[in-house]
Length: 141
Image 1: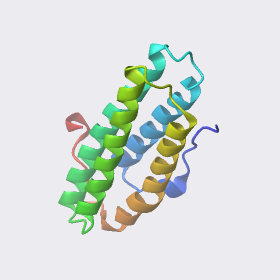
Image 2: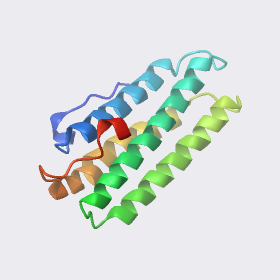
Image 3: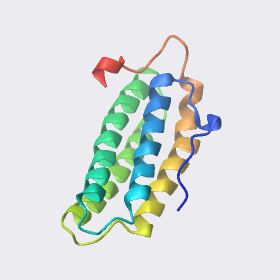
Image 4: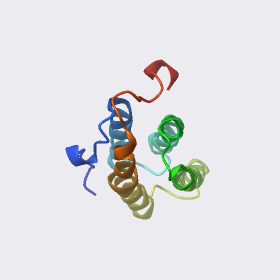
């Protein structure tokens, strides 16, 4: 599977959120790179756990930000984040419990969801961002 590449059209023009999106891409790329590792290799499970942990952190920052800018689709956006988090948590549990390896289906889900969400849903809130409104300071992420 090809690695994800950040493209400028994915930018919401907020450096904190854009950098967090880039980090989610990087963690997904690490998972792709490690997906061929031995099924008992701890690196695969750890990478999936890191992705889940970082996604949760990012979603909190993004949701607080969207609340501050009065984004009208916040409720739906939070639901998408919750659904993704639940799905990744289930993948993580299955891998950590050695019920399965990271499968092509898992990676396809992660890649498809991440690219689609950033390119459609997150780009939608770009219009609600102004220079005066920023996400919470980096120290509070």
